[in-house]
Amino acid sequence: MNGARTRPGQNLRRLLALSLLATMSFAMAAEPSPAMPWQGATFAGDRAALEKLAASGAKAVRVYGEKDVWVLDEARRLGLGVVMGLHVGLPRHGFRLDDPKAVAAQETRIREFVRRHRKHPALLAWGIGNEVEHEMPDPLPAWREVDRLGGVIKALDPVHPTLMTVADGGPERLGPLAACCANIDLVGINLYAGAATGLGERMRAAGIAKPLLITELGPLGQWQAGRKPWGAPVELTSREKAAYFRHTLAELRKEPQIRGVFPFLWGAKQEQTATWHGLLLADGSLTEMTDALAAAWGRPPARPAPTILGIGIAADEFAPGEIVSAGVDARGEALVTGWRLRREASQLLGGGDAEPEPAAVGVEILSADAASVRFRAPETPGAYRLFITVRDASGKAATANLPFLVRGNRQQ
Image (tube, rainbow, N blue to C red; front, side):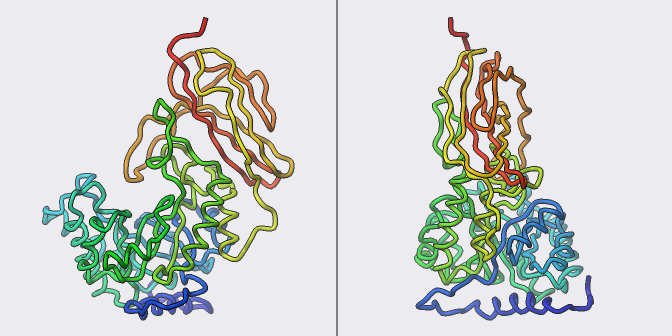
């Protein structure tokens, strides 16, 4: 869309990018700014989901790679700015930083993409890779390549800031960033659970003074959660996740080094479960979490999503064919509860890689209503998870799940 005619409001997005560049050497203010310039979410969805993001009060969206270039035009229509991701090959996936041909081909691809889209009215910044250093004992080689690409991009587009996104870590892990990467304007950190607490202080202690973006913000990850004796991680309910976002977003607003926060993930994604990180359901339904974000963005919904006060199951372990009873305590109007059983996910991948969702398991349902369910445990031993989805008349949803184990021998 090079040379596209600007409309009222499009200059504002360009000014946001320019104003952020102008504050790259900012002095830390004694009082926090009242609002962050960039409020929005990471995104992986369709046009309907993007429209819901804009309607919820978001002003920006972060996408991970060139396959989502369509978001630029849709974001322009919806009044959103875009942190446009550029895919950078991952060493953990076999990309060789010491392979000149692979490095050159990657640079050529990125050059062409930046040249094509650098004047797009919705563009806010270039996001160069995502946790490229993941699983590398020494992150510096990956970071230096990201920095080199940052120099390539800045030569083509001196207007829009460059962003590198890294996984959170201690001072010994992140400290090298203080002296690295002169071609990077913004440091993005992916944070989960309590890691958001005291982030600015930790960054300053490590000597990192560049403006920060929280490029992923999420509640307790599956790698952090408590586990059942057989290893199944325990997922928070949607009510607990919504409470985390309300509290954490309010706390992050007090930190002047943070220029924007992008909760993870406006869309749906199978990662341990289909509900662990997705802020929406797979069918696009809004949730308690999206309500919490909309309120934080200044647009609280007129009709809140259902909320789950508690869940329970008769036991953690059952014999094959034994009767299982479970319940949910939910609040809302005209609630309908869906109960679905799946095997525990076994094809687990690291670093956010896409995982297959386990198939639903058919069982004999003895009774089911909005508050409880009774069914016979599967005959096949193993780990299972009962998924609970509570919907109201408007289609908004609350979610929870209960892991349990079917023992190897039927009780006599």
